[in-house]
Each structure stands twice: as C-alpha cells, then as structure tokens.
Amino acid sequence: MFDTSTHNQSWLFASQQAMEQIHRETNRSVTQRVQTNELKEDDWLTWQEEKIAIQNSVQNLQLICNRLHLSLTIQSTATVYFRRFFLYSSIMEFDMTHIMFCN
Image 1 (cartoon, rainbow, N blue to C red):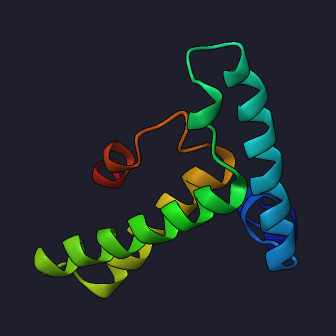
Image 2 (spheres, rainbow, N blue to C red):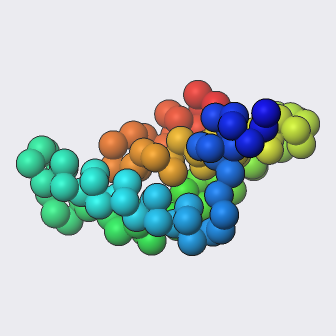
C-alpha cells in the first residue's frame, strides 16, 4: 500500500541529486517566466544561490522555533514543509519570510 501512496511517489527521492535536479528544473522554469515579467536580469538567482538562501532561512526558522520553545517535532515538521515548498517553488516568486511564518 505504501508503495502506491502519493507520499512515496511525490516526496521520497532516490538521491540528493534527484532533488537537486527538480530544484534546477524549477529554477529554470521560473527564470523563463520572469524574463517576460517585472524582474530584471540582475534579480534572477541561480539554483545554487536559491539553495544557499533556503539553507539560511531554515537556520532562521530553527532559531525562531527555539525562541518560541517549540518541540523538536514541530521544528522538524516546519523545516520539512518549508523545504518541500521551495523544492517546487522559487524564492523569486514567493517571499521566504511569509512562507516561513505560514508553516
């Protein structure tokens, strides 16, 4: 039953490279879309730059959770949802701070 679940199909990856490939494709897709919109080329980020920004935001998220005395389970869940959101979305489209507090 688990083998056919959407959780298994959508969120379990064979390797780190598989996740990075999805992130690269998301970045490429968003970059193509924003070329025709309001973002200037200077505002575009590579997938590596996005990855670093997300890692920094995850650290900030964990600091906030610690200051609020949230349990490790809640911190872990918030971190996973945050990372999942930005696996298929770009920080060029969504404000990370808003997403962080929506978790």
